[in-house]
Amino acid sequence: MPSKIILIAAITADGYIAKDDKDDMAWSLDKALFKKQTSGYPIIMGSNTSRLLKAPLPDRENIIVHREDKPENIIKKIKTETCFVVGGGKTYTRFAPFCTHFYLSPHPLVFGSGISLFKNLEKPINLKLIKSIFANKEKQIYQNQYEVIL
Ligand SMILES: NC(=O)c1ccc[n+]([C@@H]2O[C@H](COP(=O)([O-])OP(=O)(O)OC[C@H]3O[C@@H](n4cnc5c(N)ncnc54)[C@H](OP(=O)(O)O)[C@@H]3O)[C@@H](O)[C@H]2O)c1
Image (cartoon, rainbow, N blue to C red; front, top):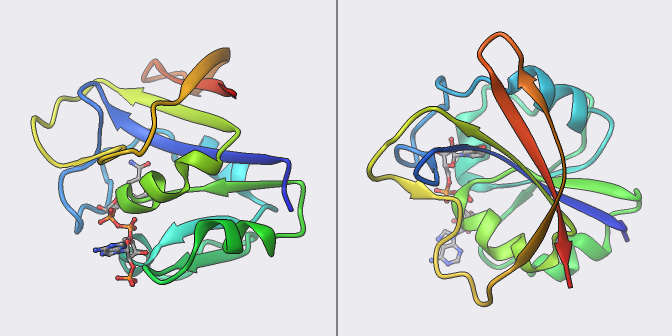
């Protein structure tokens, strides 16, 4: 079972991760960093997100989850020390209570409506900022890396 479960997301300034469930995220500017960080590790994604991909993301075990899957059972089966939860909104919400770290890259966009990072999270989560790194230096997009405080 992994000791590091990292939720990774691109978010708008108003906290959305997509315009709707068909949004292919052409707006996100952190794809190179996402690829670098997640390659070699299992990634957990919801079935809606997987349907938007042309093919499984290479060099990573793609774990697709469905509504009947229990997050704790999915996580228990993972053999690596690190894994990533890569979305979308329903999947972030269901797996958030099990995550140890949040890697969030706020984008200079306001959608006004859409799919938010979380919907009806059971309990608040306290975070401590560990560091901020460039997700895209040219566009001045940072990734904030938080640790979950228990
Ligand atoms: N900004 C980012 O970093 C980022 C990252 C990834 C994805 N996204 C975006 O997120 C969007 C998709 O998010 P999403 O929330 O629609 O889907 P999702 O989390 O990708 O997948 C939906 C998941 O919820 C389950 N589900 C559906 N209805 C449910 C219900 N009533 N109760 C419990 N589980 C249910 C599905 O299971 P079944 O298979 O059984 O239906 C599936 O596991 C896309 O637009 C994608 O581009 C953004």
